[in-house]
Image (cartoon, rainbow, N blue to C red; front, top):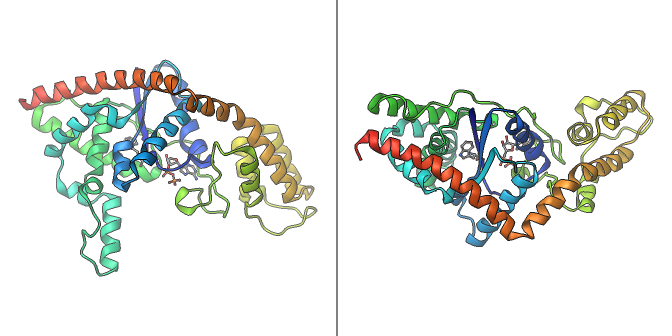
Length: 331
Ligand code: ADP
Ligand code: TRP
C-alpha cells in the first residue's frame, strides 16, 4: 500500500487551473489500486497571511467541500483540516531540533522576501515572521507525520519537499533509521499549466482566473474576456497557442475539441463561436461537481461527518508517528 499525501492552502476560490493542474490528477492518482490517500487543507500554513478569522474558517470549509465535490470522497481518501490533527504541530516542534537554520535560510519564500527587502534598502528580515521562516518545518511535519511515500506537488513546491527530506535524514542519523521513512517518489501533477484570461498562467495572484464553481453565466462572461488575437473567422489559426483551445482540451468533450482544432487550421471558425462552445462545455463538465459542492455546503452535518472520519484517521496515523518519534528521542 502506497501512502499518498498532499495539502492545499485555503486561499481564495479554486480556479480551472487548480483543478486541471492539481486536483484532477490527484483524484486520478487516488483512484489507482493500492493507494491510501491523505489530503489536507493547510489552514495552519494559511495563518501566515493573517486572514480574518471568519474568512479563514469559511474558506477552509469551502475548500474541504470542493475537494470532496471533485471526487476525493471515497473510502481510501482521508480529507482533513491540518489544524485538527494536533500531532502535526507537535511533530513540528520535535523536527525543529533536527532542522538546521541554514536549510530554512535557503527556502524560496523566505529568500524572496529578504531579496525584496534588500532591493528596497530595508532590514533583511522586515516583515518576516517565524511562520514564514519555519514554513518548511511545518511542511516536513505534514509529510512525515503521515509517513507518506508519495507527495504530488507542483514544480513550484518541489523545494519544500526536498527540505522535508532533510529533517527525516537528520532524524535517522541522530535517533536511528526506521522511524521516519523518507518520501520516496514525488509525482509531479501531470496536468500541465493552464493559461488565464490574459494569456499568463492562470493564478489568483494575477487576477486572471475562471473560478471552478462560479455560476455558469459568470463563467461564460469570463470566457468572453479571454484574450485572443484579432484573426477573422475565415483566417487559419494556430490551435496550439490559443488559450481557448487549451481550455477546451482540459474541460471539453474530446470530439468537440478535435473538431475545433481542425476548423482552426482550415479557417472555419471565429473566436466568438469558440467562446460560446467552450462556455457550454464548461457547464456540461462542471455542473455535477458544482451541484455536489453546493449540496455539501448546504448540509453542514454531512461535511462534518466526512471531516470527522478523515481527521480521526489522520490523527491516528500522526499520533502513531509522534509516539515513535517521542520514544526514539527519549521523551
Ligand atoms: P495560484 O497560482 O492561483 O495561487 P496555488 O499556488 O494555490 O494557485 O496552486 C494550487 C495548486 O494548483 C498547485 O498544485 C499548483 O501547481 C496548481 N496550479 C495553480 N495554477 C495552475 C495553472 N494555471 N495550471 C495548472 N496548475 C495550476
Ligand atoms: N505548500 C502547499 C501550498 O502552498 C501546501 C502544503 C503544505 C503541502 N504542506 C504540504 C503540499 C505538504 C504537499 C505536502 O499550497
